[in-house]
Length: 397
Ligand code: SF4
Ligand code: SF4
Image (cartoon, rainbow, N blue to C red; front, side, top):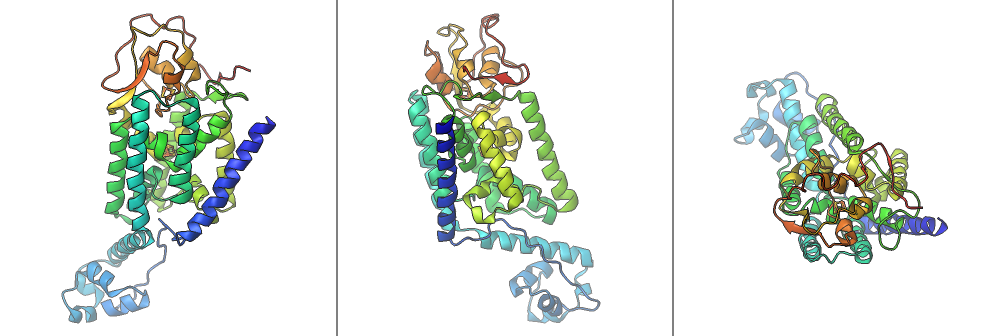
């Protein structure tokens, strides 16, 4: 227990400390923040006066009013056939897009995507060859945390592409095209290999996973201190409700409810307030005892990725001719997903393609391959203990 605590504290302090230094070196741009200024419109105002009063750049005014020449700047606002509300909404939308654009470090983003492709391709090869082991899994997770979180920061992230897009659309009525492209790329990664961007690329997902693995035995099969598998119906129910809340607050009250608790800010710790610190602390401590609590219970990309993984090309597959129905993979799987795969349940929870089941199987019946999962012969797993009931004790202690 003492050893576990020391490892946990060392890992978290190292991540926070190095992230603090790294985010300052990158220049600390306030990525993804909404421009919340309120705009002033007075009676008989001209375009030029509106621009001056609200400190708006000429290019932005040109886009709002579709100005054809300098003379248009002297025209009154009423001449453009828009209500005051329409003018404010359009201006705020364009301001939001401008702020988004200005907040991005495009060099860093391109480097990050390049490294994501290379790293995920490398892990995919290891997974396909069955070479992800208890030892190299920990190093791969730590490498992902270091590269995609500590060095390259909190943004972009798979979660951000979904959450920020919904908030921007809901609160300002605009779409930031680069974010849609990033979202498409992340989704493609999920579709190529089962949730791979979450499994091995997401800075926060891999950090939670690395912490979870600190509390596992040498073979990575059970918790040193008791670990729990939360039933999918509960974790996914909470995740769906949170997703609906994000959308509702964005569209109805132009509010980003994730902003103050955003756990990705652990990689930009100077942006964390007190509430954020408390939330991140709870998330990381919980990660010792349950697998990826943020991913399973709250992450909006986690939810989208879970839906998309149903059509993933590469996924964990069981060869039922070799399988001896011992249930070892189900016990070792950090979640309830392997039990659901074995029994071909109607709802299969998120598989984060960690490879634990593959390494554990004594009959080498599990692989990470392209193609559809086959169905188990009827009754094959009737005697294997169920893992679906309530909260499950996983530790063998
Ligand atoms: S589900 Fe987890 S791994 Fe995937 S984007 Fe969300 S935080 Fe990252
Ligand atoms: S079934 Fe479980 S152990 Fe196997 S890869 Fe998926 S999450 Fe990991």
